[in-house]
Image (cartoon, rainbow, N blue to C red; front, side):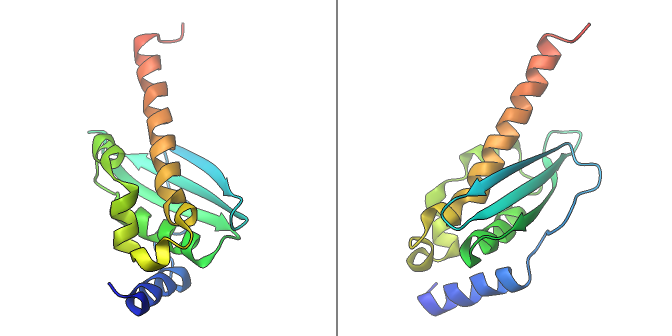
Length: 137
């Protein structure tokens, strides 16, 4: 994707965000801040009975075009992924998909949604495993 295509792609996701808003019957939600562009993102996740991501939405306040556009894009990529597949997603692959020339201007903004989603899903699953191993009385 050349620079103009990348810009058009990102502006489209910014102006027409996908998967934006609350999620019914979410299993977990987590919020992160992005000091680089003063954005605050909240990601909502629901899992299916097999443990795959069944729904992912987001809400945000502030944030640059790249941060918001990449969040829109990432939330469209991950439904039906397993936790393992999500954990295997690489920053480099995402940056290529967003358009390297543009995404590398602010790599933290380009990858914050992926990092937040990975961290949140991992923490949720670790908590679930701990509860299964050591149930509350």
